[in-house]
Image (tube, rainbow, N blue to C red; front, side):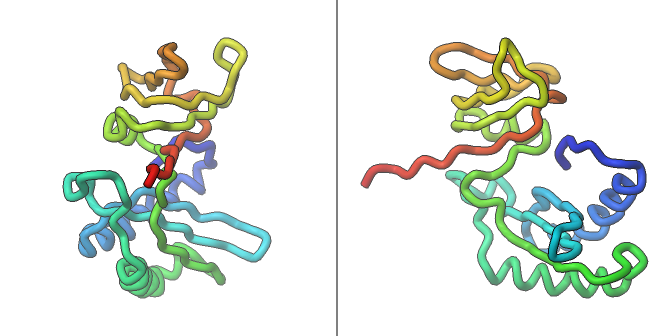
Length: 172
């Protein structure tokens, strides 16, 4: 999944949850985009984002229906019930689409969405700025390349704190 600052215990839980959920996603014909176990004000939340495999989509849309989310949610819930040691206590399960402003979490995402408009925020300033928006040019080694206002920026992938596609409504 994406680059995050996590403790060893969180990383172990994250890995165990991904090993349980990813095969269920594949069985439903979708891919796991992101999985996060969070403690929020209203209680614990297991948030899962899914999409159709990229090669089945001509233009990006997650291709995921409400029925896809409901059916997968049912199967994930049943699997978690059989492995209740993973998430003891109450939690809320949310299964959804990443939406039109899909997050970019893995190096492969930056290659896959090359040519799309993206917004990237960095942990530390690069030449005095932390926010970039423009055409994604893909990756070069461990760097993300982006064209903004005619200038090409090379951003170290490990300095990216958040990145996502930018949705622009097409004129009618």
